[in-house]
Image (cartoon, rainbow, N blue to C red; front, top):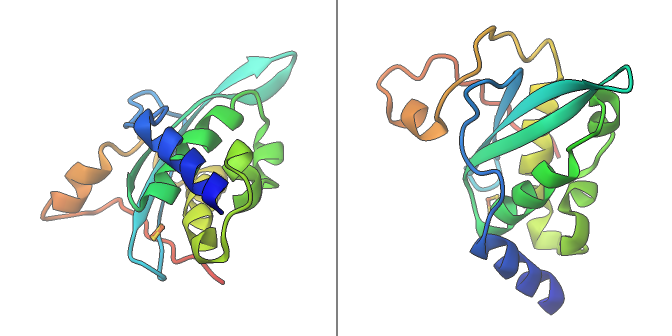
Length: 153
Ligand code: FES
């Protein structure tokens, strides 16, 4: 557990791929019913060896340190994966080198998993234009376009 926390601290010191992506192909937003935190993830695809793979991923979060650390690791880990491969990644998979998510932090990893799934699921990704800043949407008087998907279990 200590090791996990120190790795979260390291990831938090320099979070990767934070911020909105103007040219994203897909975007997903989720809110956690457990703690009220929110995360949005953007994905950009590219063609590689005849396959469509994730070129870049980025995120914005109103979340705890663990959620941000997992998202930082996940956005790196997603590069080069097909949508199908990405869809099979669990919260624990997305935590990568951070190590085993402590029981109290599993929902933090699931926030990242939920944002990713929401971005990957075409039925959920109905926007033709990627959404912009999560912060701007939250502070906007008319937060249309935000899709809040409560995470189950
Ligand atoms: Fe809310 Fe971690 S406590 S995502």
